[in-house]
Length: 311
Image (cartoon, rainbow, N blue to C red; front, top):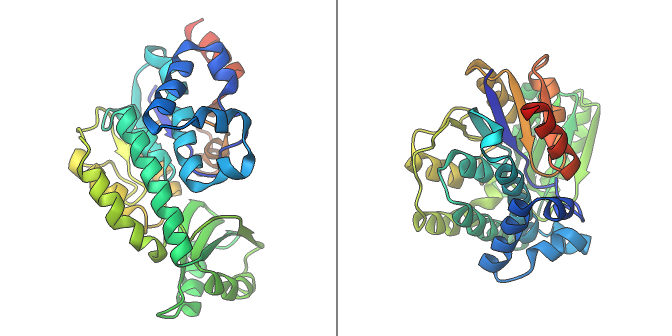
């Protein structure tokens, strides 16, 4: 069997995340303590107790999700068994690189904290929005985005999550302009999202240079297992390529459905989502029908997985 390990992105955070892991597993407690020490503030307290609006802030949500994901990964350790490939949705790609040995946990943690802050600042400088579009094929969606965009007000596909589930991103007025034409083109629903910026769109260009400078100061190693990039839906070609793709990812769409299909083509015959929530597991049932998928993010889920895997 070839195991594909996947890691969630922003939006999976919730107040209380990781608290049960820390109570039950020493490896998880050490991971959250290491994060608090490295960041210089009590991220663990935010994750365990909130308040929700502070945890949801991009600069906090991103490191909190990564820490939770790595805590689960560390608890599993060698008991996880051989990993055939890995990937992560948006910021989850940093977790995937920790899994593959491309980046150390500390370097990934500081990177996503910087990344979240830069994305938040870019959102303040040029306010944007995002909306989930349900039930419309990709070509029709792209055509609407092209039609309503202008040189000064753009809307683009941001996340190709699954067939009929795509997120668009851009200037607020452009996103609003697109909503009626998207429905007229056949979308079942267009749902505005509560976000602090237009992620994975040209509005994030100002964040790219800061992230590039930060990542240039980090050690990137060649991954031990294939890491499928959001940008290319293909394995990164070594550490330098991984660094470049993580910068490019800020303005490029997340090609998640293609990434899952590519992992299956690579030999994946089961998916395991590590971290808070189960969004990717739900998408996996649409993107890789018939391929087993499960989420492991709570103490109860971890204990059940370990019982089943180790007997």
